[in-house]
Image (cartoon, rainbow, N blue to C red; front, side, top):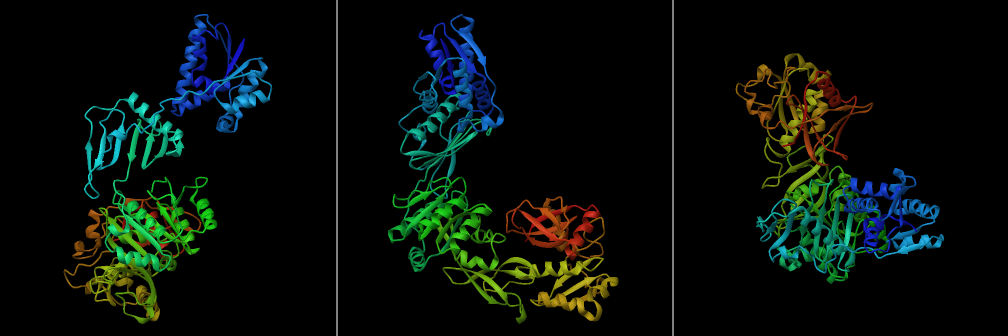
Length: 639
């Protein structure tokens, strides 16, 4: 009698089981090379099924040496393409061919393989698959107390947990004995199997080395080698379920949500209670007769059954959004909005007329809004997001109202500088706290002081104006440049005597053009006319790059602080059209680019985490000159 086991039967140990009970005594076991190749691939990927199957093959070799069976390996190994299409049946087809060619019985724990084999006239013996680690309850539930938000287990370490109340969490050891690798493997398998078999759970994501499980109100990440350096289990559970009434500004927020469909960003640091607040908002909207859906990956918001929770359709939230637009919800809760694609989906749905509530990681309320900068058109931001809620320690800390107005930005005075300005006002006081607008081709976010203006000459718009004056003058001056602001709309620029004519231009045309763009009157003087000890910002310097050449008292200026702000060193890439800086920072952030510590220009990080400067511009020529002189190019967050 010839027997051909498929991969499922080998993994489950069904062949050795039958040899031991005598039913396969003296048979010829024909193992397809396709099975060996699939098991080897699984073992290389760190999957337990691969190791279980290889152990079974070793047991069969032992039975052959004892003379209890005859063991042969036949057939062709599957190619890489065939292994990658194993789920489509390519490997199973090779195994069936071996059974047919050897007039053998096909042994399988795969019901589809068994039915296809019977349909092709092959003698098939089907056996139920082995249920490993089947449990009725979550095996790590015992680690959770009423105050436990998350449990953290890793092979070779002591179990830990985050316990306490929101804002007062402690990361503590909950068991003195270290968890062994065998125990971790048992727990990991039990959790994944429970999610597969229970109607209370599902597997949100399964990939080589990582499974994301949602079981009841627990979100569990199971990591294994080679993705992780050891088996690790992280289980998170919300410790509070709230309603909108539990938060400050409840009445105002209720009225705001019911007034019309809104675009809302709920921001805060990890563990601050953002998702808990989003759940409360979702329940409130549902109770007030709005059709509410969620977009989540993973789906772990604790909402009622009337609110349908959607994951990423086909692995892409864009597909989910397309489907939701057909469903036509009044409000959609998007948890979490992180990548550029997420912001684009959020924006598209909002512009389609859907009320949107997005959960965003941010360390300040204004940071949530700035994450839209560079991802969507600046003028569209108030139409996409009109409310920002910042949550801290489980409480609503700040609410911002986002509007747009055509006006002269705070801190500037020239009427011809009026432009669209995004105003970010404190919802409680009604006082504007930030303005966002385009200044000399750069998107800037300017904090306003208590009086609602741009602050003094060394903060807010004054600082930005100073940087832009430096950039403009240095684009034409060859020597050292210092800038000193004198109020909101006046500045003195100190340059080398030989640069005076170049900076002013023929008939004063160049300096007048700069004044017109910036709305600031500029007086050009030589360094010799600078008052002693006046300081100022050294924005030039010798090629060696000490940033102080000829600048008396410059230690108090920008380059006097470079030692404290070294920034990230970048390697510019020069293409046919652009000079590209790959910036290690978030999209939409405002950064300063420097050469050997000397200020070159200010820019906003665009999509893809890059700053692009068009070649042929004054900025690009200055940057390329610094590159040619092998100066170190660094990027630091704009202050």
